[in-house]
Amino acid sequence: MFVRSAAAAALDRKKGLFSAYDHERRAEQRRMKGWLEELKTDSTASLNRKLDDAIDSAWPGALPTAEFDRADGMRIPLGAAWQNREQARQWALETLEGRPALAVDGSQIVPTTDYSPPVGAVQIGWFFNDRCTAMDGDAAGRYEKDIAFEVLAPDELLDSGGDDGVFPNWRVNQERFIRECAKLCEFMERCAERPFERRPVCFLDGSLIISFAGQLRAGREHGYIQAVQELLACSERTRTPLVGYVDNTYSRDLVTLLARLHGLVAPAQINDAYLLRETLSSWGDRSPFWICARPDRLSDAGRADFYKQVCFCLARVSMENPPARLEIPRWLLESGRADEVVALVLAEAVVGSGYPYVLEAADVTAVIQQQDRQRFYRLYQDFLQEQGMAMTITRKQRSKQMRR
Image (tube, rainbow, N blue to C red; front, side):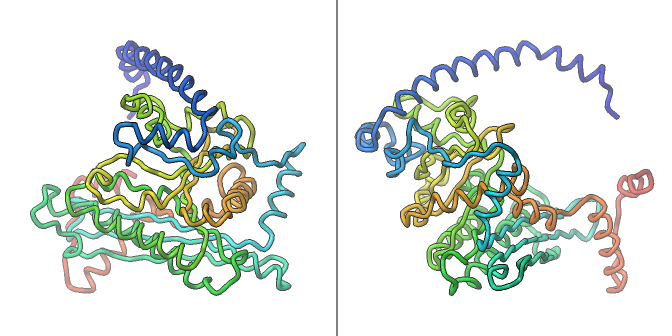
C-alpha cells in the first residue's frame, strides 16, 4: 500500500539534494546556452577545423552535415503554418496521401522464478498503412495489422557461466529487438520494387544508436550490433526510408560536442532536447541533421562504426513536450530526401495528436497487458499437463492470483 504521509516525509528529508541538483542544472544550462549561441554563428568548415584540434576528434558526440550551414541559428522551420487544428490535419492528410508507413513494436514476457520450468515469450506487432491503394481506387487504402508470437524454451534461456542464475532476462529482451529489426527488413524487401514515393517510411520505436548494448556483459552485445547493421544495410540496399523515433530523448550528443569543443566533460544534468527546447520554438521546427559520433563503450571498443551511418536531428513534434529525436540513415540525408521524410513524420504526428499515429497503432498491437500474461501462464500450465509435465507455481504467486 502507499502511505502518502510517509512518502512526503521521505521527500522532505531529501529537499536539500533536490535543491542542489536544480542549482547545478541551472548553472550548467547557462553555460551551455552561451556555448550554443557561439555554435549558431559557426560554419561547417570552421567547426570541422575546431574538431580536428579537439580531444578525441573521432568521437566528439556529433559531426556537422551540409545542413549546418543551411540552418538559421540551429533551426530549420517546417515552412507551413495553420490557424487551427483542422487546417493542420488537412495539411497532414494531404502530405500523407499515397505515402505508405510502417511501424514495428514489441513486448515480452520474461522468465520468472515464480513459475517452473522457466519460459519466456516475445510478441512483435506491426502496422502497415499502405496508402498507395487509395491512389488505385480504394478510397480508404489498405492496411495490415498483425502480430508474431515466439516462445523461448528453458534451454534457450539458460545462461552458462552467468551470474543471472538460470532465468536471465537479457535473452528475451535481445530476441525482441532482433525480431523488430528483422520484421522491418522483411517489409523493406517486400516493397523494394516500388518507386521511392510508394515505399513505406519504416519506423523503429527507439534509437538506432544502441549505447545500452555496451553496458552488457561481453558477448551479449553481438546480437544487437548485428541487428542494427543489417537494418541499416537493408534500408540502403532497398533505398527504403527508415526512422528511429525517440519521443522522450535523454541523448547528449550535441551537449557532448559543445563540451568537447571547450575541453570539458559533458554535464549529466543537460540533454540535447533540453538544450534546444527554446531554439526550436515553433511546431515543426527542427535542428539540422548531425552525424552521430557518440563516445561510448561500443565506440571505444571499435564496435560502433555504424554509428556514423546514422544522422539525427531534434524536432518540435509537440508544443507540450521537449523536442523528439529523429534518426535516419546517412544515405537518406545524402540523397536529398531528409525534408520529405521529416514532413511525413510530422504529418503522422498530427494525425496521432502529438505522437506518430503509425507508431501508436503498432504499440497497441504489440503490447502484452498484465491480464494477457496471466492468460499465457494458464495456457502454459495446460500445455505442460498435456505433455505430462508438472508446473510449479510458488506459494507467493498463488497468493497473488487469489488476491488480485
